[in-house]
Length: 236
Image (cartoon, rainbow, N blue to C red; front, side):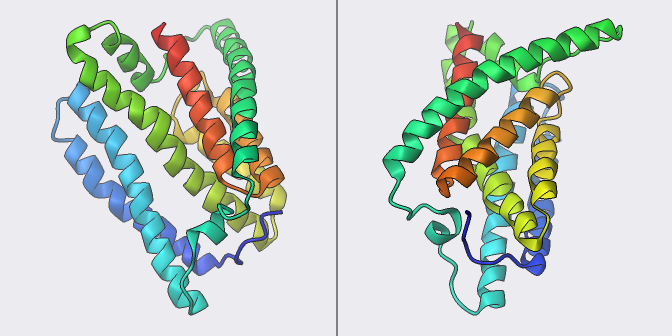
């Protein structure tokens, strides 16, 4: 499926340039704060989605020049497939299923790492949310990180990984590389050894869901459910 407008390597080059150029100011701002502080974490969490959105905006402008016509996001990402209800239900079911799979794989990864005599730390953001959830005076800080994790991250990450990179590589003529490569990239993107295997499988599940529905709303919903479920378990 994924019968969207053909992708052009030139537009992907513009996407990469936009992402790199937008990440640089974000990294500079984050560097102004104390290492490991809440302010620095907030800057990092904010900079990445902003950089992705800037890159997508650059990509859209590049496509307008390449195809000589405006590109509609509804067409590109399948939002106009008239299957919204089905996508929401499938996203909910797949998201909950991926939570269970990820838990098992994370446990196995932890056991493997321990057997090798090493110790894997959870993501810094996960640790921070767990700490902030116990402090009533920092409720707004907790709300900020929860919103970024459950609402913002699923949208921008799905647009980049499943909405752009996966179909682009696939339509160039490398479907297996598209699936495996973007899944591994998605796992590496989160920079955590403990969750690398589980997030790779999660990414493959989100790709399969996108292929099945031909609507990016489905993997966005599943991603949001996945993140929300993990946060609920983390906090409670």
